[in-house]
Image 1 (tube, rainbow, N blue to C red):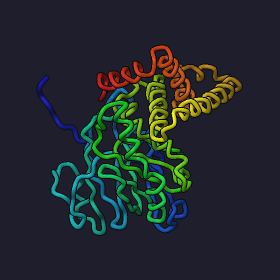
Image 2: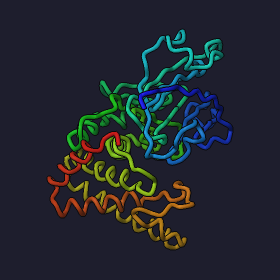
Image 3: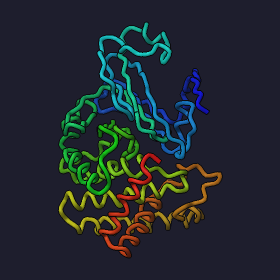
Image 4: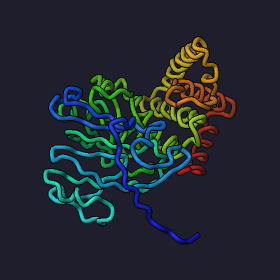
Length: 338
């Protein structure tokens, strides 16, 4: 039981890897350099690396990435200090010797000390610039929109601080945002230490910053406490929507925001249920749907978000707001990293 051993697995991805998204320069904001990013949720990590691709299994990881000299690499992890003019001092067994012999490359090294499920593994490589928003928050994007992103996401530290009051101290050390190229097809992805967001949030008036509050909330509900399987996805999203609305109503100093956002969400839930019923997919309207022989991607909708929130909101109504907020704190403290 006390014996440990190391297994080396040599592998390559293929052009068919569903987790990897390769963008031509024409698909980026700058139109000059190519770009690459990953999307592993829900079950695409298996196409990126050998893993147990289920949310019930969590691992820590270290990574060493080589990229062209013009590029910057980011991961859902903490960046280790390094000298970009030469490879860092690391265990040679960790990396293929050929990488060290290449000219015109930079080496980036990362570590994720907290256990995460495979769907939170993330990599992005491109021509990137950054701006500091606080000592623990930085925003990244292509150079042409980094200042715009820094303006629209300037409330990020305030969102984090309010989230900590509702939960527990932030566990991931850094919270960075990466605003991806216009071809990024999602609203946001809550990768630990590095949230991915769409540039369609850049309105100039911060009116869509609630998406950042949502992704920040996942730092506790989803990343710190994770659903065991995709049938229980509502445990991620229901709690996260609840926490997002709490954060926004406090930051905006407007309690009515919570109820107004809930009303909009309820209408979206009704629309999603109507669509599933018309398509004969009644099982996907359930809070915990039967996903046997169903790709979790095909089951995605606002149902786990808004039906999950509706359940939690009703429990809050029954026991009282103060009691329910105290329960959420205890829930997170008891089950964090699980």
